[in-house]
Structures are given as C-alpha cells and as structure tokens.
Amino acid sequence: MMKALKVLLIAVVCIAALGASAYYVFGAKFGEAAKPVTAKSHGEKGHGQDEEGHGHDEEGVKLTDAQVAAAGIELLRARPRELREALRLNGIIQPNQEALVKVTPRFPGVVRSMRKRLGDKVKKDEVLATVESNQSLTTYELKAPIDGTIIDRDGTLGEFASEARPLFTIADLSTMWIDFAVYRRDFARVRVGDPVAIDVEDGGSTIESRIDYVSPLGTSDTQSSVARAVVPNDGRLRPGMFVDGRVVLSATPVDVAIKSSAIQTLEGKTVVFVREGETFTAREVELGGRDADWIEVKFGLMAGDTYAAKNSFVIKAEIGKGSASHEH
Image 1 (cartoon, helix red, strand yellow):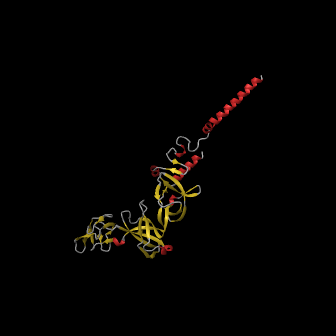
Image 2 (cartoon, rainbow, N blue to C red):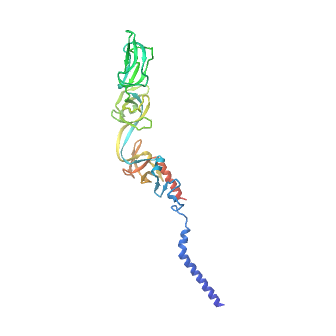
Image 3 (cartoon, rainbow, N blue to C red):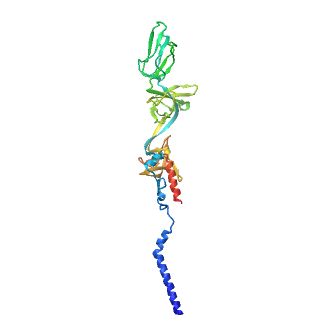
C-alpha cells in the first residue's frame, strides 16, 4: 500500500513539473496573443489610414495633393511682409472727367440722321450725326472730337437741336476715376499719395493705386469729402458701380507673416498646420501684430514654411478623427 502511494506521489510531482515547464516555454507566446489589438494594429488598414485614404499618425494627418485640392485647402509659404493699418472707404466708379467731351451742334437745326448709339465706340473725326442748319438750310456733319465710347445720347431723328444742349457725350474709358467718400473724422488721415487697394467685387484681384486728389470741399447731403484715385481700366471698371477701397495709412515690416485664416485652436493651443511632404502637423505659434488679412508670427514658424492658409479647419477635423479613433 505504501509503495503504491509513493508511486502516485511521484507521478503527481512529475505532472506538476511538466506543467510548469510548458508554462515557461509557451506562456509568453500565448500571453501576447491574448493582448487587446492596439491602435496601430487594428484591422488591415489600422488607424494609420481611414476608408477615404486619409493617413493619420500621432503627430498629424497625411493628405495627397489631390485631396488638398478637393478640400479647397490653400497652401502658402510664410514670409516677410508689411502689416498695413488701413482705412476702409466706399467708392464709386466715374468716367475720367478730364477725358470726357460733350458734343453739341455748331448751329441750331433739325437732326437729319443719328449714326451712333449709346455704348458705341468711336474714333476721332468719325461722323456721329447730321444736322440741317436753320440759317443756311444746308446739312453739316457732327463728328467725334476724340476716340472713346458714347456714354450719353440726347437726341432723336427729326428733333430740333441747339448749341445749348449736347447730343452726345464721349468718354475715353481707358482710365477711370474712383471717388471715395471720406467722413470728417478721417479728413486728416487721408492724404494725396496714400496707397489704396481697390476691390471691384467681381471675384478678381484687387487693384493697387494711389490717392491722386483730396477735395478741400465737403458735400452737405452726405457730410463727406472726396478722395480720388485715377485707375487704368482693363475692362473691369464700369461707371456707376460701387467698389470697396482700403487706404494704407501706415506699413510695418515683420519677418514672418501668414494669412489670418490659417489660425486654428487645437487642445487649447493656437496652432498653424504646416505641411512637410504630404503630412500636415499642428505647429503651436506665438502671434504678434496684425492687419485686416495678415498676422505676424513671432515664434513657431520660419520664413519658407508651407502652411494651410485657407480651409485649414478640414485638417483640424481630420486630426480630430484620428484622435477619436485612438480612444477606442
């Protein structure tokens, strides 16, 4: 009996020894296989890439050039710039009065023909109309004194015309006046020679010009005075249309400036999304002075860094998606 118990005890000890050996040999492998899937090994694509192909990592988001274009993200380079203190003024486009002629009959008489219409372009000495003189009963021609465009026509066939009333007004529209309304609180701030940026509000680029004239007089109905810029016209400027002007009062140079629209807030920090290769990363920045469009960066960016200047919120949203995915 005692012999049988000894044999059983030895068997139990051997089995326990074998079990311990198996644990040490295979335990690490089995334990690793039992760990939860991490953010980087979750699925075939993992958190490094979502279904749309947007690459995420711990530091930023990867977007191809095609994705950047599709999202409407504007890329610019940080660079030195002048920050401008500007005064915003409302303006109206006028024909250049120094290149405008009113055409009147030399002698009173009856209009026998009207050869040009409103809006027609004419050359100097081109016939505009014919008039039969009341004095001599002969017909003479009314000719254009300059090259230009007919902006007014005041006469009809068979009508009596006198030398006191112009039949045509011709303007050379190659240059235009833009008259800005300046209110009394700003009279002393606007001077001849000040740069002015003019937004025609047609979707095109702003027109850079200068103030050529500041009226010494005011108008009683608007309680304002006129500051005028003479601007070359490439066809965008039409008399009677309103424009927006920004008169530059001062300019301060800074070493690094970016578009104000590039600034975002991420995790309580002021950041700009900088692109290196195809990856956008959030760069914390310290800001300085600003104007209507640009802002100084004192720390965080260097001149030449490429950043998201427009629609940067798209990148912020993508980074937010990546952060949310890592929390699962």
